[in-house]
Image 1 (cartoon, rainbow, N blue to C red):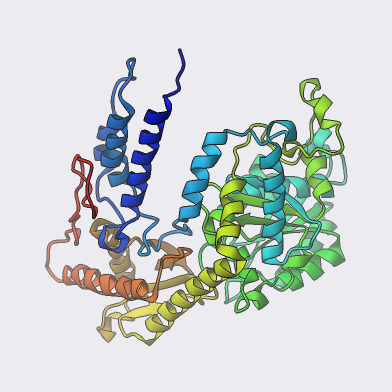
Image 2: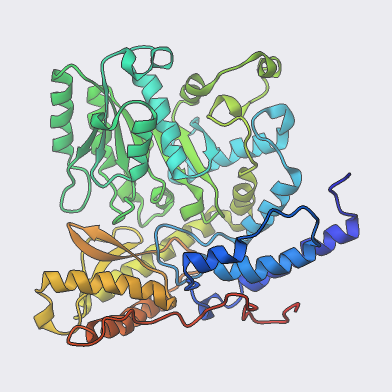
Length: 511
């Protein structure tokens, strides 16, 4: 039995799905960023027996709109300030439809010829966008974590003083890797997965601006070498996930050159800002790195998933990942064909490049840079407003588009009460999620709980940052009001329960 639809039905289903997408993206500022339901309530929507009989796709699409879209956190909203998540872009939505239609497996050239060449071009464009040298190569992966893992695997193979691919990490002296205490947790995971061992990941102290202490790094390298270990790689961070700090890349490149180490830059968040005139100086030295990890689904505004592992010498990727069994060998011997399966871990790979290729052309590099500049400007104005206020306190510098701060009430007598401020902000983080008007997460900055606002969303404007402070003042006052004898309730209880109800979107609803 065929699983295909006839042409008219297929077109109708695609049109209906397109209508859902259009409705979802309308009037984003008027809708809650968080659905307000519990895990049990969400799970109840989808707890059912495996279906044995078919259901009309139109009915299922209506259910998707009712049950899936209403339970989605609106990271597409300009008022989503959590984590480091962009809202995607419309070009990417169209591209994902087309990529799924083609269903290319981008592992070997002869089954994905156009897709392969498009990916190679996109990798070159990403490198050019951030100022990485011409001639560099790379591969698209799921995101920054896998991009970092890919680059660190390449660094391990290239710098090991023994055949690490055959003997494993135990086949020679222990290799050591160096990263700031502010480095992303995927570095810890990668060192674990690569067999280097977390005991050999040296966490270098950070300075007051949250960047790596270069002097401490040099001391640690010398200590490890004297102890008979094999220093291998320095991981610099170009945009830490906590505060947006950019390590001193040029000085770290000097240290690596003197000591014969691989310099890898985790630029998953901040990397594209290297292409923006106002931020470019922060990234001086990026072009000297041996490898760079980029998340195109962050500041290149692509829909998930789109990461990129860049390596100065593409041959290092191939020597790390190429394994050619007989059933894959024959076509790979053609020197005029490029097989991505030899440059990364995956054999089966989706067509991630189309959404980036179309976006670069539909928007142009200049427009993408302007969007990044706008994000930085909006968040720096937010940081300035916080510094000028009496009821908020800035907790870290804001070099890019992350602002760490806390609510402290307008009452100066409260400002020195660290224990109460910790409790107040902890309860405020909970209240923000329950309220749903904005989405914001918490973190820890020098041992103090902080509200952490970040945007890499091309839709975010100054009015959204103003609205964020307005909501926080409202909720902060509610939380603070419970201090003296009031019931310690969770303020701002959800106003927007949507389970089982049509979405209140503008325009004609199909039901």
